[in-house]
Image (cartoon, rainbow, N blue to C red; front, side):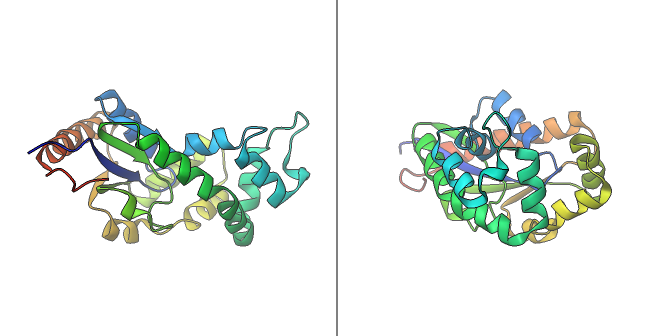
Length: 209
């Protein structure tokens, strides 16, 4: 029995739960990683298709003096206006997913893909397994306020714009709780990575993406 080329895992969470930390942890352990946030940032650079789509959807008022997209302004607009958020997603998501598939197809072994809207956009079918990074709501709020310099009200708005964590828990294959400290969290990530490596080796060829 041959081991398949890759075992692709969709990694998600909610804002402030520690998804990026988890991705870094998996990468440090030897997993191949792809970040949709990173792809989105690259797509939003002047001249790229994503940039053109965003300017077309929001107009030149979304640009800074140097012609780059004002990400802070775009963030404020989409988190306070549902229609604007959907407009941005319609404009950029197909491009981001196409690039994700292209990158994944070139990787082997355990591949961890950081997908912020994995369950919101029902993208589970693209992955062999899904992992949710979760934490207690009060911890989540504190982290966002500290990290992004937002008010509690703004932070709550951003949390509310996503599918509730409890709902995501029911959809994920595995939930990793990030409620204690970084040392414990990294230990959990390490344990799960070992498990994923075993899963990858144990899969019959063909039962994978």
